[in-house]
Length: 316
Image 1 (cartoon, rainbow, N blue to C red):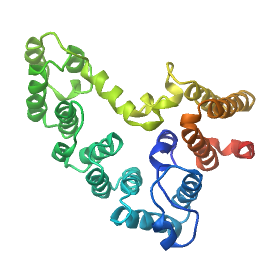
Image 2: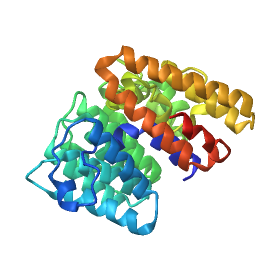
Image 3: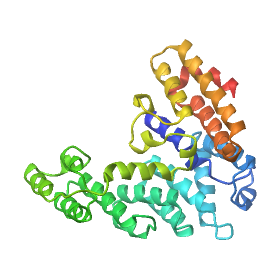
């Protein structure tokens, strides 16, 4: 597992630990469990994640069960579709990720988590215009912005400008976005000048809004700062984080990367102690803390970044 995938899985444990199975070797039993967040659910998802990152045979079986649950109409489990999409996306099988995420949205059209997965898969699988299926606040604006990103990656300047003009007319573009933001490299200087001249007072810095909204989509944003993940930044490079546990894990990883075991272990213990204390105090989000603890254990166990710190698994 590479470093980017590791931190992505760590933040996206929400995506992966929202499956519902029971720890059983029986496919029939696994398919009969109804959706719900509980201890059995978390335990089986830990097994399921291990299977996926294990041998090819167990990986294939994990995908097979997910697909069956996604297709099974009797239990209506959109999260199986969603988690299937996440795994295909991480494997760069974008068409399969799109198909699975579309299944999740069709089962639960208003769920923002599924919408976000469909948006990402649509961009990567060249099906960006399926974003019209999304039903959310400011959906048209978000879709236009997503289409611009897609056309920018495809180096289709004319289409980028076309979408940009619509957003300018609606006052959702700042000069920073054109001059030094995501789209700056996609537009020639002459066109930038014309676009900047057409700007008026804007309602919002939409690039900032876009990342803020994406961050809010993650249910773990209640206990974890997901902003660095949404921006595809490494957690160890982030100076300002707004959740205590995220800061604790960042400091732990920094010292791991610096090959400083004394301080790495120190910050790991701070992370684990805070995690368990918060879990006891914040009863409403207890399941999120449990999922986070399981995810941390799996990351330390499987990510090569922590190969010299496998002994910390005994702390869980």
